[in-house]
Length: 96
Image 1 (cartoon, rainbow, N blue to C red):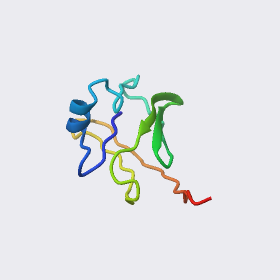
Image 2 (spheres, one colour):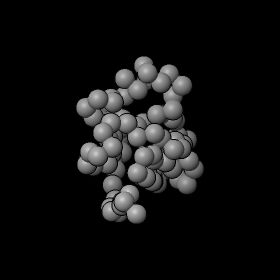
Image 3 (cartoon, rainbow, N blue to C red):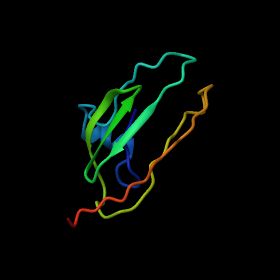
Image 4 (spheres, one colour):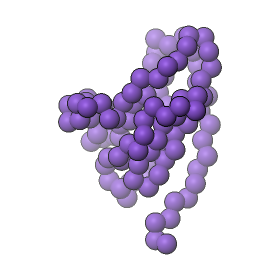
């Protein structure tokens, strides 16, 4: 699993600036088995779970905090599997 945000914080920059790997992690995924991915997005951070196990915790959001965007799922073209993205949108208010 990997976090990045365009245009300024692509994965190559995050790997270079943060070599400790805090923005990416492996997940124990068995071949030919469905997996459940959950991304919990907060105002300034996110947590990623795979089959209920946390793989990335409290990822510090990068980029413009006032920016509006979408959450995406990218599946490599060499993957033999498919993916379904189900999302729930919540309005987040920080003004009390």
